[in-house]
Amino acid sequence: MDYKLIDFPIHGNHEGKLVALEKNNEFPFEIKRVYYIWDTVHDAIRGKHAHKDLQQVIICVKGECDFILDDGKTRETVHLNNPAQGLYITNNIWREFTNFSKDCVVMVLASEHYNPKDYIHDYHEFLKEASCNR
Ligand code: TYD
Image (cartoon, rainbow, N blue to C red):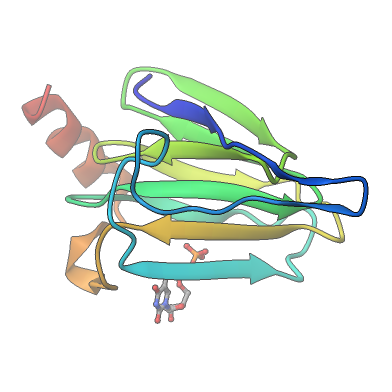
């Protein structure tokens, strides 16, 4: 499965912690868009799509949730619960997230502006695209 977990440097001291993100050796792209989701029902399944041309880093800044990744061949669940760790994914990955804790806040940093045409919402279409791009 093509994804990376990135550990961000933590700044801070006994009074608190801070992570700063911009394109550099640790962070792979220029950030053009940020969105975040919270107040999500525990067993809701969000996402359920793939992207044609998008890089994203997904950070669970509070609480925890499961991120399910599917490349058309295998499925893998990544548990996110660390605000100093980002899940980096790009194209050809079907993604779903679920098992949200009540306090869960997920922040997503994206390499492109919002473009509904970049989404693949149909799983069978995704399987076709993924096998062509392999
Ligand atoms: P959607 O991508 O369906 O969320 P999820 O995959 O988590 O279920 O987006 C929900 C709504 O928010 C939809 O109406 C589109 C809108 N939206 C934007 O306007 N800009 C964005 O960057 C994103 C991600 C969504």
